[in-house]
Length: 139
Image 1: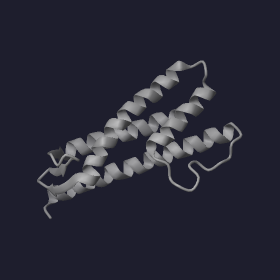
Image 2: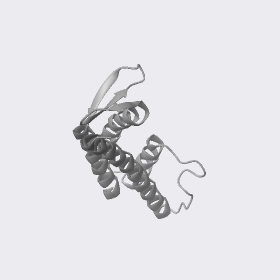
Image 3: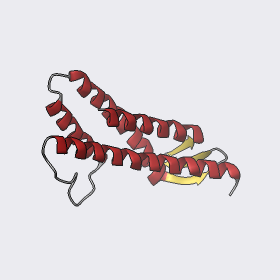
C-alpha cells in the first residue's frame, strides 16, 4: 500500500474515533445531567443508544434545566443539523468505501453512485465532530 493510501486510512480511522468520542461525551453529559436531576439510570439501559436518541434526550434535559434560556436549545438544534450531515458523511465512508486513490477513498452511496472523498474532506469532518463534542461538553 502506498504512503498516500495510509494517510487516507488514518484519516478514516480518526473520523471513526471522533464519532466514538462524541458518543461517549454525549452519554457522559447525559449521565451527569440525569444525576443532577436525581435520576441515576444508566443512559440507554442495555442497548447502546444511537446519536439521534442521545441528542433527543439531551435536548429534553437541557429544556428542563434551562426553561427560560432558548439560546441553549438553538445551539442544540444547530448541533443536530451539523450532526445529521456529518452522520451521512460517516455512513458513506464507513459503509461505502470501495477503494483508495492517492489522496482519497472512493465510496459508493446507497444508490451505488461513486463519491471521491479526499483526505482533506475526512479531516474537515473529523474537526467538525470534535467541535460538536466540545459544544456538547460545554452545555
